[in-house]
Image (cartoon, rainbow, N blue to C red):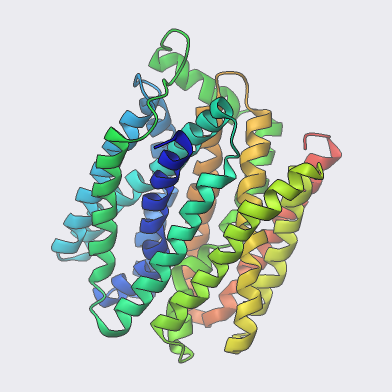
Length: 385
């Protein structure tokens, strides 16, 4: 199996888990008897904690000889944590186990991205190719779990993601490329941490991270409450799975066809990030008014811009701004803000917003997208992107 296929398998397993946890975790928590506010806290806690856990995982991971070793360990922790959450009872115990598992699963994303970018550069293929297979797995997981939940127990959600964690652990240890963390001498933990802190106080770098993270964080209300809101509108779980699948089909199309075309046309990642922010304004504003099913399909197609374009542009901007030898720290800080702190705060707010005003809570995501656009405008003004 060539390196591109090995990385594709990693993304298939990783996003096969996310394809179930993101749209259906809220339903599973609701099935445990938790309120909207409690669901918001349970989903947001591991995201907010990434301010600490993200850098800690990055520094810890760079202490290994091979990049695949920490990936395997985190997969095992995630699998055990999710399994424990499914077997336990009570908001505190289930919350703690979910926190551990979700923290490990989130840590897998930047570590996998760094390894994939490194392998892609070495073997001369486009990073978006294996990453697109992850999106395809996300689609399949959406559809399959939506169909399962139409007739089966919501407990299949936790069974699925626990199994995915175990498979990630096994395949990472045996199949992922064995690229080293560094070609030079091993860097001590204190020095790795100091390098990360230097990035954290770089104003240009952090403006870029906040611009990317603000647009990505606008998905918080959608991830946590779209399935619940659509069910309240009379849309079945199976149709919810298809709606989510549609969003990821266009995401795949962007990664496999639009992204290579964009590179040939030399359209910069800054322009793509701006398009993502503008699409987020349109998408969340429309969803705030509970449109009928036929309107939801084109709104889901905007996911190609609000997520895929923003994600790929963000990776490229951070790769450009990262200092030599600081790519793991740079991508981890980007992930901490985009998939951690900012989306965690937005998710924390989403629970009470949904309890009080329902789908009008999407308008808060519109405001966050506007902030991302303003930060992106600032980056262009200073010539950073």
